[in-house]
Length: 466
Length: 158
Image 1 (cartoon, rainbow over the protein chains, first blue to last red):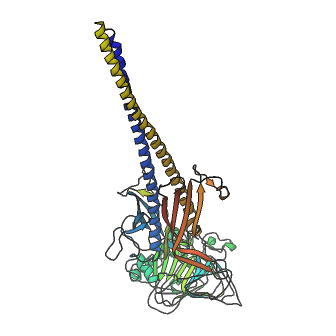
Image 2: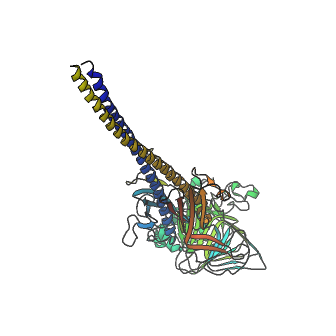
Image 3: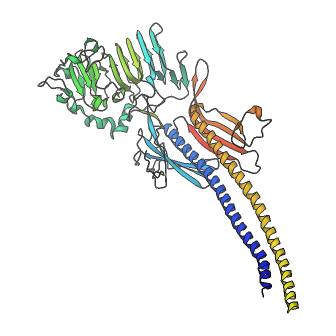
């Protein structure tokens, strides 16, 4: 018995060892194989994820560009939740993948033209889908941060530079003609661009684009901002909030103002509107060259003038004829935007030939919208930050500047006529001249990019919000 | 007893030879499996590396074009060659270094809008849609599908 035991152990050992080795080897190989195949699948899926995100970004760019083709039309973009006349989500095949894109308003509700839009795009490739959101910001016609359009002057039909010395710091654009008086001195520091028309002048800074620039009229703009447009504004304006300095305190502070006697139905602003206003006798309101430091520019100030004060709001007039040298307007735009709307069916011209001083020199918060079939004359103020937009529905309105006036902003009109010595200085690209509510010429990628899941929640586990 | 023990012992030795033969066959099969699996794993891992490299080269090229932006991304097609480690091979060295990847960048524009400088006639692209296609070709791996990334650039886009 002692002889047979080792022999048995030797015989079984060879087979068992081999089977064990084979089993272990097979398991190891199977594990490695599974790992390698898994890694391979992972690599391909990651590649598909990368392709899907690029497709999603393509969708964002596509939709912002599409919306920009007709920026004032609410039916132009593809809507996530369309109404009857609106287009639904757009599906675009790109190569072997696709993107699906649509918009909502920035807060998720129905979108109104001229406002920021949230663009939601899903890119799909090889069964992998990724969804991103980004915001399309309106490009103000007046230029600035999100806009490629930085015009000091835009004349939809004509720009006539006929003054002794006219300087446009920035670009000049037109859908019509530009007329320089060759015997006078005029200069445009930026580009002169003719849209949809042949250039009427030559020079090293003259350009041409094939399509006329479309801009909303003042009534259309008012309708975008107020349901009911100018008709609504006629009875729902802030005219009753116009102020004057307090005659019983005589400290000429904005904290002690009293009503200027206007009602919501006071649609006329003329010289007599100023006669009952308190003359400003604050020494700090003399021109800066004479020691002024408060409501004054270098060459002008409120001192000695009857001052009408415009707090933030929307003011509506149908007749403006302010020509008196003793009339002055203090625009309190430091506390919020001030908009003057001039409308109505009258055809007699209007004049805003008064000293206008702003509490904030930022041109983004002062606008004069002129929607009458007539001419608006702007003179008498030496330095005015803001924008004058005279684009009426009848394609007739004009802006005429005849004095020594500098506008730090933009002038847009069907006809722009510069006589005398004038400067229109655009603050330049990247400035803050553009403001929400301005006429819109397109939309731009406005950041706030984030990837979201199917519930619209940020995919970042740390809860990153835009 | 002695004969009987020897006879049983001989039978067991015979069985051991058979067992050893079976074990050898099993080992042989296992080794064949190991060797073929080793080849498969090596090939798959190399392909994974290639795909990962292609993914990186493709993404890098796409981001580079996106960085150039709508206005400045060059129109048309251009091709560059890379070695197995993803290093760019200068054209002069293509005779001596065998490329592992080629990256083709194709930018095409539809609905283009140009601003024309009137004096010189020079055209500046200011509108339209630019389709970007980046294709990475596996030059040393036949049968591997090209890696393609597509996206769109617009004037107002990101």
